[in-house]
Structures are given as structure tokens and as C-alpha cells.
Image (cartoon, rainbow, N blue to C red; front, side, top):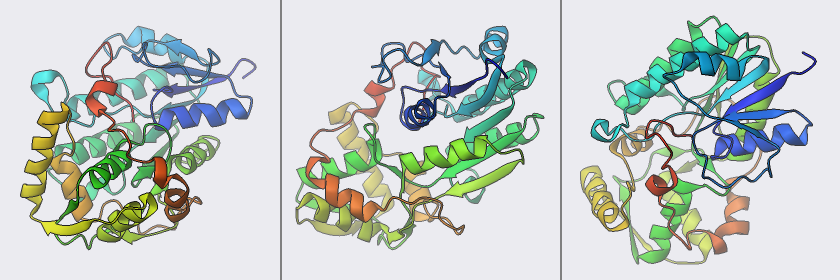
Length: 315
């Protein structure tokens, strides 16, 4: 296409920001679909901003018309129907977006999912991911489904940063259970690189994207503490108690510190992959270089995700 461009949902978010950056570095024209109009623009206007409205399919189609690749990072972390957050609604919105991409003639769709969602039946977060993946496979689009493990690195490194904040702020850190389940952190830049590479291919693919190092969760916590230069007592706690503690912290911080789906996913080992790791950047090196500045400030995820519609969130 002479005037072809790539579209990134949520290019001012976390993973979307890295995709947009790498695309711009390659000289590719980038547009974003977002409702984060008030969020800082790290690209100084080089990314064209278009509003996203899942109830206006005509607008979605026109926004996508002419796009060579659509990178979809849209999802919701929370399942709070009374506040408009709903995993089943997020899956429906993804399906609407995929249908709009097909009607607009988008060349390829790269969709961000999560590692091993089919191994967590009945949990709405993961079930919604499964439904969104199914919608893309059945949509008729050429597609790549990217399944990252635990992301680290970058400015909006919410989960790892807030773990570090808790470790830095308190003398004791509680593990969910014994902490012997695996975790395979992957740098967000690696995930963006793999996603862009998948966008250039033709075959329909589903792939895990994991980092080169595997830890137990307990080892992972110790690596963070060591990288920050602090020593903490690390003790096992029942998952329900850990979740309740997170709820209490959340009341004080006005945020959701941890969700039960995230705890279950961690303890079932869903943050590690049996596939060959595609990430290159090692967490051990990254935490050694960045530990001193990690966790100095708590990142309030709910506050940062306030857009013009509560249903529009991005990784």
C-alpha cells in the first residue's frame, strides 16, 4: 500500500507504547486508537490519535481502513460490572474490533493475550482471553496471537514496580503459598519486537513470549530485593490472606493491588512457558541496573487507567 500505516490500540499505554516506538524507529507511519486523550504523548505528535468507540462500528472501520497491521493491546484488568469493568464485555469489544478490521481490509491483526489462558478454566480474566482469541481465529483475519508471560521494564511497569514498593516499604513480604511456582519474566521491548515481527508474517500463529530466565516466585522476590539493595523477611501466607492484605492496602492506596485471578495465575505457573523463550533481555541484568530506582513510588493503576470511558483500557 502506497499510503499504508500501522494501527496500535493504546499507543500511549504500556506495551502499545513500545510497539509504536519501534515502528516509528523503522520509519513506519503509526496511528493509535485510544480514549487516553489526556495521557502524556511521548511521541510529540508523530502518532496520529483517533478515538476508539466500540459502539460505533462505522467509525472503527473508517479509522482502520488502509492499515497494513493492527496491533491490539486492549483489555481490562478488573472485573467490576458495577463500575463498567467486565472481562466478557472486553472479549465482546475485541470481537467488534476484529470484525471492523476485516471490513476495513486490514492486512493483519496482532492480538495481545496472556500465556496459557486455556489452563485457567472458569476464571473470568483468562476465560475472556480465551474468548477473544477464539473471536480472532474465527473472524477471517490473518492473525498472530501474542501471549506474554510477566512483563517488566518500561515506565508503566506496574506489577513489578508495585511489588518493589511493597518490598521497599515493609520489613516483611508475604508469598502466596510457598512461592515455589515458576515465573518467567519478559521485557516489554522484547514482546514489542516479537509482535512487530509477527505482524510482518503471513501464517496464522499463536505464540508464547517469555524471557530467557525462569525463577520460582520466591527467587523472583529475592532477586528484586537484592537488586534494590534491601534485606527482607520473606514468609509464606495462605493465598486468601494475601488477597485480603492486598484489599486492605488497596483501601489505603485507593487502588486494586492484586486480583485473585493474578494470584491464581501465578500459583498455577501460568507466568512461565514450555515453549522456547523468545525474549533476549535478562531480568537479572535489568534488576541489577534499575533496582536502585525501582519501587520508590507506588503506581496507582486505577488512577492511571481513567479514560473517557471505563471500558477502554490498554496493557
